[in-house]
Image 1 (cartoon, rainbow, N blue to C red):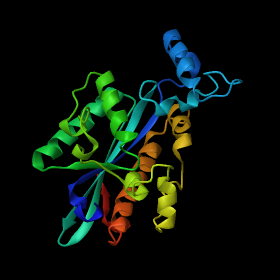
Image 2 (image 1 turned 90 degrees about the vertical axis):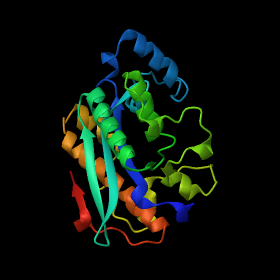
Image 3 (image 1 turned 45 degrees about the horizontal axis):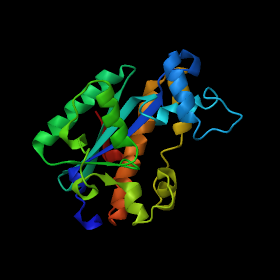
Image 4 (image 1 turned 30 degrees about the vertical axis):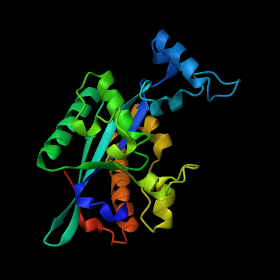
Length: 238
């Protein structure tokens, strides 16, 4: 599998998500009741839905996307370089429309596949679900419903690392550490994103964090393939 992966044919991405509203009290009553039911499967008997509402962002039905960062690798005069672009904002629908237009433009040029860490379980389906909820036509590259696993060409760095072992989860931060890749978590981590969004109103900080994850995924694929990492000087942001 690793030998067949062409890094220039991958669209690397990472998403940042938050709960639909800043607090549980801001939800519509019907949504509150549905969250109470959903959260009953993982909260303790002493906890209420409001107590665990910070976890709502990981569910497409109760969360929303505030940033998608994309990375592409290209070769310029024999040197590998990374181009990054982030779609971030409070208008989730416009963010997803802009991202969809990029995917369609890229697909018109050549046959790309998506790549993310835990992308098959989280990023790819989350994006697709949010697009459907918001009435956005799915780009063909995301329209995988009904396809068999071997018919989907997306690449998932966590799946590659498992080598068929599905018993545990390995974080991107841990893989970066053991492969000697600079940590993407040197400012904030996923647990802080909602606070930075709702309380600090700092989307640029979130975009930077998201872009670091994309770069880390690219460097990890290179490490998997026994190739040299791309130096920071060869990374540009659109």
